[in-house]
Amino acid sequence: MLLRLLLVLLVSLHCVVARAQDSLINIIPKPVSVKSLAGSFALNNDVLLVYNNDSSQSIAQFFKESISISTGLRVNISHENQFIGKEKSIRFHLLGFRDNIIGSEGYRLQVHPTCIEISANNTGGLFYGMQTLLQLLPSEIESLKPVNRHSWSIPCVDILDYPRFGWRGMLLDVSRHFFPKEYVKKYIDYMSKYKYNVFHWHLTDDQGWRLEIKSFPKLTEIGAWRAPRMGEWWSQSPQYDGEPATYGGFYTRNDVKEIVEYAAARNITVLPEIDVPGHSMAALAAYPELSCLGGNFKPNVGDKFYKKIENSFCIGNECSFELMDSVITEVAEMFPGKYIHIGGDECHKGFWEKCPKCKARMKTDSISTLEGLQSYFIHRMEQLIVSKGKRMIGWDEILEGGLAPEATVMSWRGLKGGIEAANMGHNVIMTPDKYCYLDLYQGDPDVEYKTYSMNRLSTSYSLDPVPEGIDKKYILGGQGNLWTENIPNTRHLEYMVWPRAFALSEVFWTPQKNRNWDDFSRRMEVQLNRFDAAQINYAKSAYDPIIRVNKNYQGSYIINVTAEINGLDIYYSFEGPDPDSFYPKYSQPLEIPKGADTFKAVTYRNGKPIGKVVTLKIKDLDKRMRQTN
Ligand code: ACM
Ligand code: ZN
Figure 1 (spheres, protein in one colour):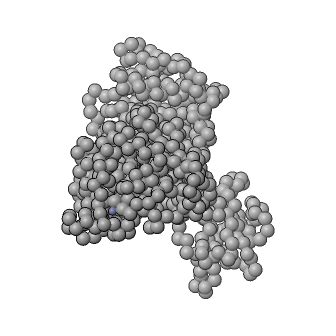
Figure 2: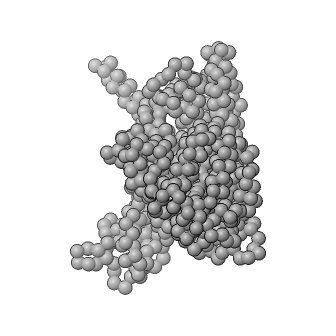
Figure 3: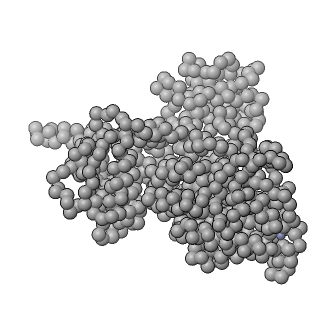
């Protein structure tokens, strides 16, 4: 009897310890399997990092450097042959046989009180095991300055982990606004912490050509520079004659080499995008003879030009293909990855229709539609790319007029293009704008920076990249896309990326059945502490009130208030100053009192404000009613 009592006591003690441990385990993206164990591993200068070959040595070194600033620790690194076996150790172990469960990017991580072991088939998997280990350390590990802490402990745990998809991308548009090499590296670094493995570099667009091409130097001499503008995009005044083009920049071949290597050390492949035949005004500014009708083009400054000024290469002019050949040749030399992205999106075809050369091309090649002419261009681009030993990716518009034989489709206008391509047996990367575009609003436009359309954190989190009825083998994975028309600086950039890129990392990595919004939002909060330590900006919009309007059966307006994060208290007012917790607490949909001209709401948690005050003008009820998300 006494023995049984003791046993029950012991088991429940173990459960309490494991539960306490659970609150220390807040990994994003959530691993496939996590088992909490009792106890912890204390990280200090007695710990030895042990490796078994050159690749695992590089990961051990990466770990040492990642902890050195905040902890001040100077741990030693040693080959396993010199390892005595008595020391406390962290073993970085590349397996000598293939572990089929973890595949090429997975890992196993075991933390015991005196030893930690990470094992993987490949360096990428080892790198991810190391990133998970870093996430098991306290948030201050990310600090940019030394932290005075009593101990750096890691909860004991047994983790098995591998990704759902092989393609986990993030796009950065460096054309609309330019971000220097150093910041591109930081972007890549933060991608890698959340196990993204493709950096999609949107290098060219109407507003700037950002990649040095030795054989066509004017692409950057002229195409990389535009007149500076501040304020709302698409309502700028055009560059006036004689105005200096002082805003911009580009990446040299050396810069590219440095970035490609930096990314590779973090298991990231760089996907270059040369966006053609549309989105090419900056290139036409450099080589106007490659337009259909000619003109004095300048890289766009954010003024409305679409359909009024040419921004597509002439398809009838063979010289366009000569430039493409040189560009693709140099791009293929610079970027070791398997793919080159050729854009293909939003190409205005109206100038082709008026162009004698384009018309002649259509006649000689028996092309009957403008979509067919675009498809002709894309097919030739694919031949070029394949001739350099690479494979082509394009936005879903490349489906129009007939898909090139081996093309991979990046589906952005919803999932539709991806479904169509997969049904034709083509590979697909899912990046539907409503879920994956990180330049969209993530909260009430009343309190956010001006942009267009909505993509909330919970919407990003709700994506399943494999639509029902589709053969999943064609879905390579997905991507978050950061377009930068409205994003002039890096603080703003980070605000738009995080935490939505946490959500997408989990969409692309974690098994669908392991995903749960409340669990994610709890873990996200801990990750945000890490961002505070690292001084990275992020949005807390998911804590803001969401005000929705509809009508009851009598035709009166009704206001509903929710928040994405569950369990918050909402207080509101129809008059006077901003509401606080002394105002009425929201509990059910509200009718609008006579004469009220404003509705305001705020969120609280544990008696403290946590979201912003959001205001809805009563005169805007109709407009708000039309907003569905
Ligand atoms: C795109 O957003 N035009 C790909
Ligand atoms: Zn033409």
